[in-house]
Image (cartoon, rainbow over all chains, first blue to last red; front, side, top):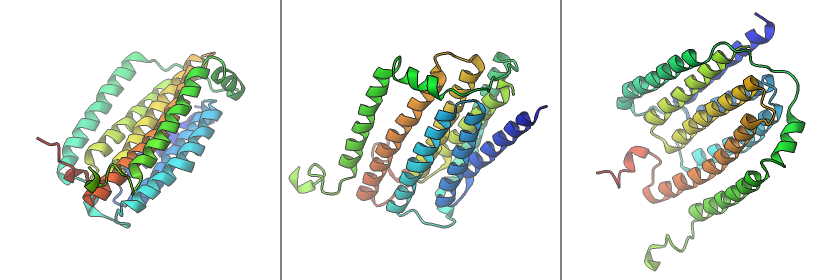
Length: 172
Length: 101
């Protein structure tokens, strides 16, 4: 076993441990911080798989923007900071564990049946090729997704505005 | 390294996200678990892209699109949670049962 294999297994272990902590910790802020750990580990994994541009986009967009949005959401909805026993539905826990473990079991069974241990090639860089493809073959979806972002921006502002005329009850 | 550990780790992350969606009571935490699921799909796309050594890099491009759509989804989702909180004074999804039969 090569050193990079050991490093990859270590990364996958770290990914799963921090993912478990995201859904089991009883502290809202800790959940967001562990999501940062999960995403950072994923970014390192992407760099190992020679997808360095995707890794950087993941760091910029997720860790830079999405986590900040989550922290604002936590702040605005006045979620109690510190350990909070009210965060989980305790009567759902057993059922949720059974459902998620059975999904994991089915996936693992099918994946082990379908894929042999094909070696993943992880050499070289792909950013130059990615830029050329993104602006030639995928230029229409690339432009379309910018309109999706614009729509999300306007929709988010419209939904979250406080002086929304449609929400005003005496005007309806 | 081989493809199997990557796929199994992605499946495990997907199941962890499902568990989080089913268990969490705070709506912001449910959105956090959805991010875990989207992340596991990204891992699958990039791993398959590396395995097939695709000349058109379809896997990486799709994961970039997924990341973009996820950012838009978080913005809209948090705006909806904010509006619910403003109307109902709570972010607890157990209490949003207006349309429950």
